[in-house]
Length: 353
Image 1: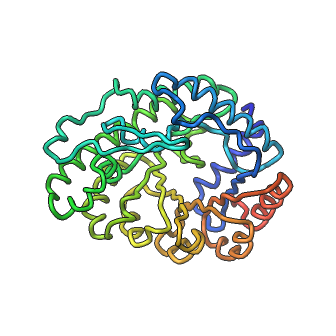
Image 2: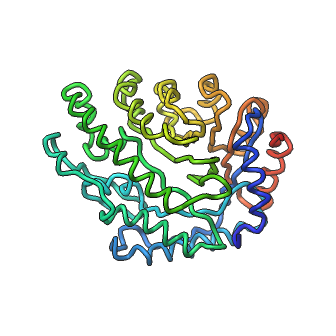
């Protein structure tokens, strides 16, 4: 692989980590502070017409970024996906999309459940094509240079929230039957969206890439369960858990994106089958992710947790990390500092056979 000549060595470590059950194992990913290889803002493109031009510019920036981090011997796998913000995860079903320079926002697709019959998903939708055809385009352009990873999906409850808007939070109480019916539809849509992505990216070293992780076998990710942050555990158990379970049950493993503000729902989310890989994203006015994880490791056990950490946090919590199984994403100011972090992690948290 052109952007990572040592890819076989990297994948040997990554596969050993992802398939072993050993506490104290860790992968280390370095986010190097470097020149910001910006491309034109998302609101400057005319999608879907400009899809290929946008992806070409994204590839160029990606390759420049990787050229600037040569000499860092971490566990990052150079991989791209077709990213357009966040709205692509719901716009393939319906609703208008608003672009800012660095993301996209979905607008609700209906005002009441009598209008949901007009919603559908199909191979012909422009937004689905932007994701699926975008992955195909990247796969062709990246052959021999970088890998392709899944774009991921919302959970069925998150998709319902995107399409319904925040009226969803009163629907829990005022129209639960209609909402349950709609969640059946959104589950089918999520299954379709995820399956089409998997058809395109195929197999990578006996598994799949999603987010910054490799998952073995027939797996999916990353998924979001953000609505759980804003409702009670009981509400999530009724309206979220059964539908996410339907989505992930056919797969070997699944990767879920969680928030530090959503601690109250972790126990119910962890009852969903095949969820073995997690990411704990930081939120404002919340404890640091590693502290939230320490406080709740009794729930996660030996499941894989990706954490956003500083080098000081790694050192201050090294004895705890020896009891966990983590992917440590850490910022570095220079290649020298990056390799100092990597050496420390590998010395103290080696991946065991």
